[in-house]
Amino acid sequence: MPDLIPHHVPRTHEPDDKGWIVTEYRGAVVRSWRYANILQMPSHPYDGKEFGQLSHVLGLIDHWLDHQALPRPYVWPVPDRKAPRA
Image (cartoon, rainbow, N blue to C red; front, side, top):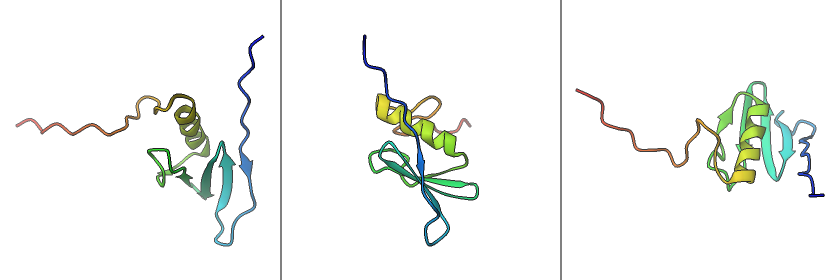
């Protein structure tokens, strides 16, 4: 029988000295305060970016670690913008 993929559970810590709630998940750190969730994961293309939902950030971490790619509709690297039509 093949090994099952382990279920990853985020670990949430008490707020730090500035009031940010720190969540560790699969080697990444997410700092949360009110509606802001900032991803800290140096190998991730969205390292340092802010998101609105913690569950959204956790999904991006999962997809990046499992597939080394971002889920649709996210694209990395960001494609060049086409010139606007005249």
